Image (cartoon, rainbow, N blue to C red):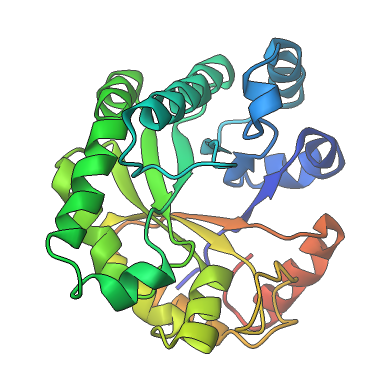
Length: 271
């Protein structure tokens, strides 16, 4: 079996550095230049124009990391929800400008939720209801625009809760994302399952994976091979999926991309 082609999450300056590497195999690419509130609320069109020029000749799968700073997608305050809806729609504006077909959003589930869902009546249902109240309009727009919103685990300990949230939209425009380092943190610190279990729980709804190594204690975003994630188990679980999700290295230090690809290549896991 041919190992999967691995992509990366890059800011604009990093894209200039790794442009040839991305285009060489038309790797999956996630733009991380448009999630900050000052960018979304300002004039981001020149940045989009710069990216479009850099991506001349690119035919791979393009996405962006959507907004997340300072909010959650399941607020019970309607005025807060209005702000979140505005930011998500601004993210969809960016998708339209650069031709992106995927946008990453952060999961609403917390470690506190995990321990209290069965302590508070209707707590699970309220997360779903409030998320729908926030995102329903954006989901319809994403459907029309050909964009998939992928919900990434952050503190999630029980990955099936997030799957049920995604399934509740009954839309091809809402699917799952896994961040390997976040899952490893939940496993090592909060007693969640190992990373490959997250892949199995997502199954056919998995559309996007952030690949980063970590130690199970913090959100390290280390180069692949530096931490303690069991990568062979993760890639065995990915290989069983009928459709290949976008596999995106999300490293804090982008200089670790060559070493990460080197590790994955030597282990026969990716290219």
